[in-house]
Length: 413
Image: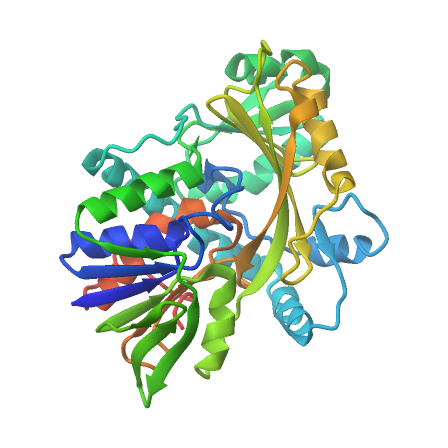
């Protein structure tokens, strides 16, 4: 079958790869000149089942309310005239109960664990260099009280199969010696030794090259203008470089997926949530991060990719705005400088802002809706890199009429 994948982020490219493995003829369209140049470019790079907790938790409404006056909140609400911001936010708030947060987190965790296993299968099948770090991820806390609460919180994932280790301050420093200069700021942490990191952009570019080597047809720098439908079928895609057709289509357009879905009469509950990141060269500094970490008190994530440090923070409900100014990064830069004073060339930090395609539940959407040959693989939020491999396999299985390996409760269109 000829399958056209719309979108060249990590989700689209992993989908192309899994479809190729099933023997399909694959075509991929991406409006940028290269793959993984939007959401997949500046993320934290964490393959982190140990961080599968959804944002729509009972604490979220108060955090969003505080963000209207306080600038240092991890979740920020920026009111606008966009009616979709308000309607999506109401759906998000409806998920902020203890029961729904627990259900959504467990669904997300199972998808993440499955995805990590598939990543390992991909790495065994294709030679891909992406600055991989398999030393785990450290989730640390700044007070004993916060550590105790974190351990209680993490029990949900531990009971669901996540390998975790509770560490005191000395054990944290043994896992990450580069935190020694900030030892008095760390009370302890939870270490997930099976979590890992790597440069998502670098991985996606390498996997795209592998797909092309295996016969996939990639059209880069080609903008999708319209998806043509007749009745219950998609007939083709009008692009900036002409019309293309296929037997089946996969909508993997990230933040743009709901725009095209609306044009087809489909309501896709995905909205862009803005995030910020810094990429900082290590230079000649002696103590850069060697293990990825999350400062759970400040919700700042820190990873190391070869000779670079990546710092990410903030979830801002602000629509399709990717603008940023230097002061937007002051807080996160202060955190990483405080924790790793000899860790990188902080004066050379480069800021970036991108959009995460979020559903209110924090889990993606799969399957079909109005059209028998249009499949959705959308709404992966802040963990698209972690979930992409499972999402790709699920989509390939659905297209092939095969049973999926994991249940998709709450994730089907």
